[in-house]
Length: 563
Ligand code: NOJ
Ligand code: CA
Image 1: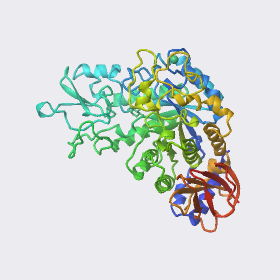
Image 2: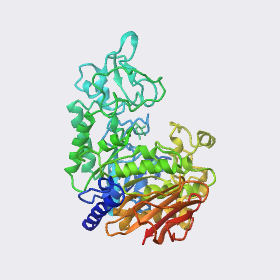
Image 3: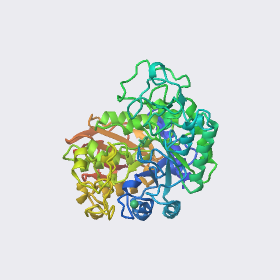
Image 4: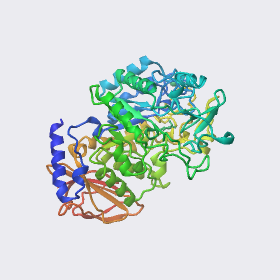
């Protein structure tokens, strides 16, 4: 394809700009070419919990390879695998002690090569999680850096003298609690860490460090990675003046995203350089950014002034929403579609850091239907959608109490308050859900007896079947390339929007975000959105609307083609 769809998408924008909203022209796809990642579904895999193949209770790379047919059948375009590099696991892999290796518990480089080969055969791209802000304190670079003040790698990390009376250099607080500084008695200086003390921040201002990290990026690109998910991109630089915080939060209290420790202008140079490395490779490699921002304007800036930095910054303004509120969703979606300068928005709800959406939005009674509704939202919008493994089954977040009540094998520390959203993938209704033949490192959710791949594939009404249908719908021209049309539902509980190609092929999406039936009156582009061809997908089953006023079932989803 795709020249044709690009042309019609651009035409759609021209047409809609006169009809719908003046910012739409800016919004809906000024892409000069059709990149795979602009409408991709990227499936996040937490490798520790996806599929174990050697019975040690820990998922591994071979396990992912074994499940590639499943992913292909589901219809994802790419997988993002969270860190599988050597690591002391203070933060389960996000403390990397070797950027170009595979941790023994996950396998070998040969397993990686096999995984890439198998993925490519199935047209699935593989993204590597690149932890750019910090390494492990056990990384040889940090061991050297801390060994003496004049070690050549001293400046690869951020070292400062303390304040008076044994105080840290500043009273900045870490995202994981406590100060961002730890005193290293050997050299009597403090090192900076925006996360755990075991995760010292790398100093990107140092050319040697910069080169070493870019070499690590090239290593994975040379080994078949289609790009990177970049960890913690706002934090690469600190204000070189290290000013004191005029309103320091209590240690352990909320921190993060401060003007002195995040979103620094220097970040752009690093990201531009990294992007130019990716662009020097064939096959349209991509950067997916963990780029949390306080505002939509800040998010727009992450793409780069000339759109030459991160192609896919995750939209945390959307992803952090945790209540079904139609007005709030409309605002965040309209912002993402209309105020990012035409760049591709990235929608997600769940991740290894976010509680699972089945639990977050579920009301205890209608969770399955609500899970279908949130899926319809992320998967029918213009842009890229992330899925978190097991989301397609309706996996839930296990509470601390539920985790503690289930005995697992010996010596398996439950390490993290995010364990509840990292439990093993549910393949079957068996005792370990076919995740492992041994003792799983985290308990399997008891709900796996009903929420599992084997059972749900047999059931046309399951959450799995709904996701599979949505992923198919995304492949059709309207959903693949159509512009976003902001609409008004006339009802505070319902969120409506459209997708439309330049030749007029369009679709209406309406989501009832309440537990009661709601009457909607769809308006938007004048004179349109009043007659519909057929229902493309609905849940619960609905007839095609015959006019722009109709009733939609509790938590209902209606996706109808325009006539
Ligand atoms: C973001 C990662 O997603 C999270 O899991 C990790 O704890 C922090 N960055 C620190 O690397
Ligand atoms: Ca294993």
